[in-house]
Length: 100
Image 1 (cartoon, rainbow, N blue to C red):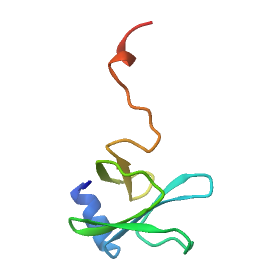
Image 2: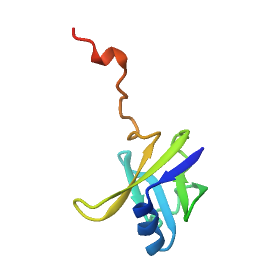
Image 3: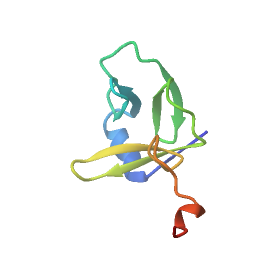
Image 4: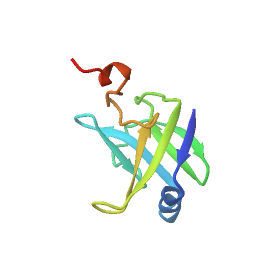
């Protein structure tokens, strides 16, 4: 498993303490924060990345690659993708391109 992070994302995380937390809340919505959640019942796996430490909820899947992206809109923040996709996002394949 590897972590690929954009340089702007690494800077953003480092400026906020060097830790990134990825977890879900109540209805399964993903949260990506630089501060730990208030819920101490969430268990995390620690992943060493270049320039920061990522804590991923142990209930989440294990992709081959975590992609950490920086976004400016609607406010400066980082996001984490699983193998380049949002969790649960359907990947398009060759058959999706065929006309029906």
